[in-house]
Length: 319
Ligand SMILES: Nc1ncnc2c1ncn2[C@@H]1O[C@H](COP(=O)(O)OP(=O)(O)OP(=O)(O)O)[C@@H](O)[C@H]1O
Image (cartoon, rainbow, N blue to C red; front, side):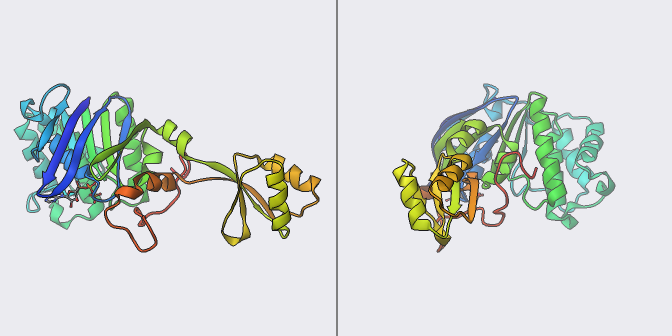
């Protein structure tokens, strides 16, 4: 379990992390979400004692990181830009880490195999692709077989097969009863991986909720209608007590109504329909709404982040 209490970090006038308090529990994957610059990496660095908090504290199974005699056996981490010694082989990089934590050399071979890097164990990471570097970072996190694992944007640079592998690895680690804390700026990614969500914006806590509750509260379902008799249809819908929203392209949207009742309503009024479908608002949209106020850099088209991978954002699909 990780416990964060009133954690605050200032860099000059910038408040990167602002009075954050939350707990990360074992047995589930906890997603740590926020737009770019929200303070995720800074929070994770403070958890690992790589940055000193301005105030507040972090406890790893009740203790400060500094109090852990062999930290890799308690908490393993992949940070965004993990510093590996480029001139040392992948194997030797891990061996050095292992020796400093009294971890047997056999474990190095084991984790290289787990992440699929056995074939390049004797190669130097300076020649590695971004994806291979991520895998090596994950291997170092797994080295001490720790109960707590922390991953900062672990799927960055990975190909679809790699992304799939990381998702399954995180879920498997949580199933083993470990504490798994993973950051991302993509809701779509978290929807496929995380059971619990901690959302931050400008260093502040915006949500601490189960994934299921987040989906329940934020995925608005609505019906979409298109008709050559739009005005008449709109009037009929309003007369029967529906709330109608005029959408782009001459479409009408009706919240919380089934396509069956709307189809029957149109038939009763003799109105021709060219389209009738049931839709769900994307979780990415809900997430953007939640963090819109706190986005550091707005694109011209409005608050948007995660533009690099708009993708599919419904839980359970595509993964
Ligand atoms: N060493 C530093 N000196 C000054 N400001 C910093 C430093 N590190 C981070 N910041 C600032 O603190 C804020 C939070 O940054 P941080 O990297 O923690 O965010 P993040 O959520 O991890 O973002 P990203 O998804 O872009 O990595 C940003 O405004 C950033 O510019």
